[in-house]
Length: 364
Ligand code: TXA
Ligand code: MG
Image (cartoon, rainbow, N blue to C red; front, side, top):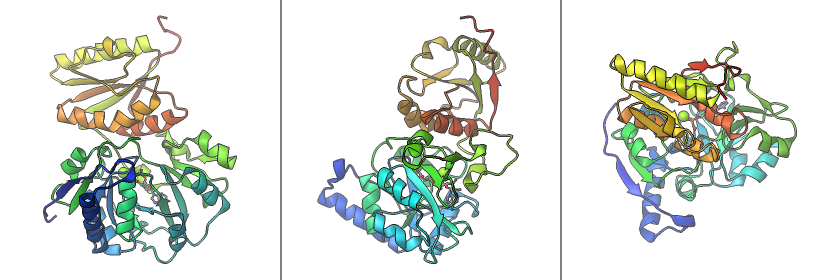
């Protein structure tokens, strides 16, 4: 791929108030998108890699910059509810209700597409993924970029999604025109994806908006069975969910069971690994971090506050790469609520390598 100069611009935009200089940079970024170029930008979930969603050449550039297979469709980001009508051919009641409650916010809806959306953007599908993000920098960029910005997460295909601009630079420098640095993404995991073309609506990717929250609005909601299983024998309904993802360079194993057994297992194995020349790492939580003796021990957050675990997970995975760790062990998390999204990403990062320790042998 040709290398180009990538400029990074800091935009603080506290509460949506931009300085005149920031406004100018945002307009410049919007122009790049209108002219068919690519700009990475912050959202409340993770950083996105944006291009004009209605321009098939822009979509082709996005796939090339990420090294992403072109059958993996892109999410179209909008900045006003009315704009949705242009790009969809049907608007089911469920979509309207979810949009009213959760937009702008970390929710993506799968809808039947209109002719305005090129197949290059939707990976050949007749449906389109639509999201209205709440981040003010994202909203301004979408507005100045023409209203429809296709944006996958701004990582190279297979790597953890970036939650800070530094990791966007690491993956995208020389591949895109501009990076808007708006600080740390506050949620840290990608949006919840809900297919509203089926009845009942189905969750294709878990995220910050949980099944319970969706059920409060819609009543019944299904979940794609492949979300937490590696052996369902079915293809995930979101094409991107079938690919190896988020994987750190070191070999990651999740250890599940009573906390005392988990830490004993991890310490025993990191000791053995060290003896055979590996650099070892542990993904632990505030509550248990003292127990581990690996080379690099990182707390991903507190079990008392699941949001903190979601926010730091991808960063921690990338930091193990920076540290050159070759064997990583992680604690396991509850699979309900936000934990479902956390475990979905962690299981993918581990290639579903899980050790299950017996519940009944718990020391206490
Ligand atoms: O939070 C997010 O959603 C972030 C930020 C940047 O907005 N974006 C993001 O995009 O995670 P990406 O491309 O990394 O993931 C999009 C996922 C993929 O798994 C893709 O297969 C699925 O959405 N998807 C997109 N369009 C779809 C469609 N029409 N039907 C089913 N799945 C679709
Ligand atoms: Mg992604």
